[in-house]
Image 1 (spheres, rainbow, N blue to C red):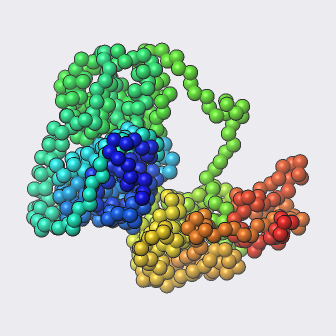
Image 2: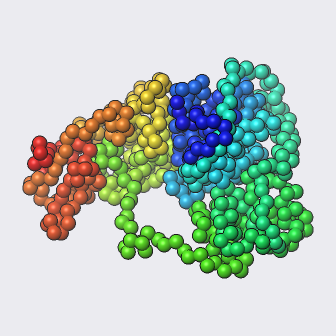
Image 3: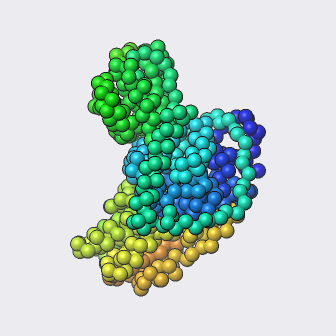
Length: 625
């Protein structure tokens, strides 16, 4: 039985923040979960998929976040509690649904997890999704630890049903991927069949209905504000005439800083967990006796601006500061030493805690760079090489709009196959714009999962308007970047997955694409010929590169590497493999060995691609000779 389904109430377990969210949802009786994978939220969906194979929980990897949110909304409208997790930029995809769903409301509890990514560990921006709560008018909770993540998830379902609104659970990477002790509660039983009660004049948002729905939403916000005033997730500590207001993981850093600086009897701390609507009366009562307040929050001055507004309306004149050059930046995530240092500076305290040593100080030298790189044996690298060689043969230079996925790692030299990137699905549409106003050869790249997520409308647009570019769909059979989750075109599936695959080739033809090539990128001569032909053609055309993600294929099929390759004495030191291909298994030996090319057999995947274009590379014989 899955770990998240075991344990007695009161027992303590070590969970990731994402796992704690799943456990909280199970304790709340969640019946349906719909998600599109995206770091730092991916483990929520992955664990729910695993659990769905052992219970009556319904789980699906939806085609994108908008679809997932609408599936979850349909379930919640029919009496099933639903959970919809996504990364922060995923909520942009679902924002159209979110704004009007706030008007429509829910019948059963519905929780939307927005996993923000300060410092952009795996994202193209670090937007602050707390503003989505304010814009949509939905309640929002912010956990600071795995324990709070579990408790807030559970409470969010009850809050959702009380207000008949979806509830946002806003996390950050540091909470999602922290492992901490979590006290278990009792698991709920699964509900019976749902039922959709017809109320078209409350649930169909034509203008006349929407006008009344907005009135109901504002009334629900008022009730939510009253609940925020007494929420168990807002806490006060300390004493004195100085104050700190904080939320989320920053609250942990504040707690440490106040203790380490010896300020417990001089600083009062208001830690907020129910952050929209804000508990105005609680905040004003907190501010009234204070002389100055420091606001500790990552990213935007969401709390700071609200506190200043409340203080001004009450006529309070104390200093409220947070985002300022000498204090906290709007950039990147915080850490304990930073919060302690700024707290000491703001309140004039002495920071006597020694700064933690950097790795370079401990090791006596800087850590070696480890740039993000495609894995040895990745089919995307083979396809990139064929495009580079085909362009070289044609004496042309390409422009490469790219997309979100493993293939984004084609950015760095020697591949250098990424010139323009905005968001999921943008490669096709930006390629259309670039090709329309330039005479350059435009080659757009998109992955299989991303193609289903948001590439279909762009390709339909390109066909309809006759745009002139080549789209390369890099189909490795899975959503590899976020943990190898399935998608509608999947050819590599996790055990027990029952989703029906939709062949990409048929879909591309159905969209009206007449010029289409399908290749196995590891067959170099065939791929090179097809790529040349595709580059020389005109109009909207598609080349599908089909080969499985080697790492995931080995994992699910137990396939072992058998071949190994080496650089022989025929090598002329031309550096072509380094300058154009750049497989991580290929490297230069040390000067003491003459600086020769070699292949690290521990890294070599045995894909045999390089053998097809370099006669100096040959298979290792038995015994490694």
